[in-house]
Length: 440
Image (cartoon, rainbow, N blue to C red; front, side, top):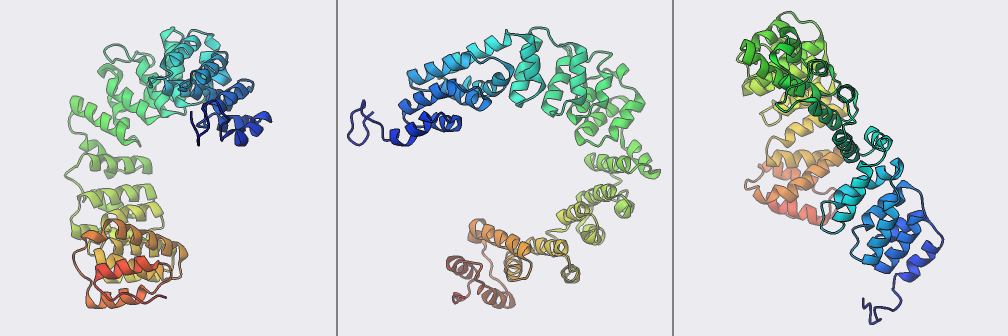
């Protein structure tokens, strides 16, 4: 390497920066130096990290296994290959799984992974129990390849594992070649904590393993994926699932089931909507009101949306108000409604009013953002500024219309705010076709 006229064997310009830190034996300095562009510094860093028994050192060494300098990669491999304990392997394996996808370092990564996979079963068990997802899945596959995972263990993990991907992998591993689930473990999966596992079991249990009552309960599951799989099974065996949902609404019990019934009808595009959902817009449960708002918003006419969802903009539940706003936004909301929201005196009501105005057309949006930018609510002003700058970047070039005379006058007055730069004010004035504002 030739750096500023120095021969390749000369002193590196990085030596003065890194060598004192590496001489002090600091592990974090070694990790940072292992990413230096100078191969000689990386080699010194690898030698330092080789003597540090810490997961971060093991991970940094695993990265350097794919180094393009042979002296660095060789020293890193020597250190990594000796670290096969659970703690070091948990930090090393995710890195080497990524290295295995590259040309350089692929063989070294394969050797390490093969050695751990054929090593002590206790190490694989520890790796599959905690840590990075990719490491856990690799360890589970290695155990499965050695026949170390029983159906009982797989079922237990599928029922309760905190990682939904790992839980689903365990459930799929229980299935036979044709996708069938075992008679003992399969029905248990319907009670899993993970929605993906419940949906998988719903789709793969045999007809004789899935009773009518169990399938009816799955139609009312809180997960949309489970409800979708249950509706497919129900149609195949008993026809239209709509009457099941309608029977729940006719005799409402638990709020969770009522919400699931509304969601099921919505997902199934039932003809009874939006009428069947409207009575539940005033239900005592926010979950039910939100599901009803979504059903009405997706199936009602523009007039029906304004009539039934506008009152929910002031709902005590933020999630219900947000669901209503999603469908109200973009429609011609009466000025009296916006005035009521402005006068409510709450930050959430002001945000709702601003959001509606932002969806009501280009110059209504710009006028609303500038008005909020000059207001007393700092959070609302920040939101308005972000929206205004987003419009300048992405929407101003395609804003072909011009503001009305009253809007143009207000925009010109509001552009005097110091919260915008001079360039931003000039750009807004240019697009609006008004006189360039004077500096504030």
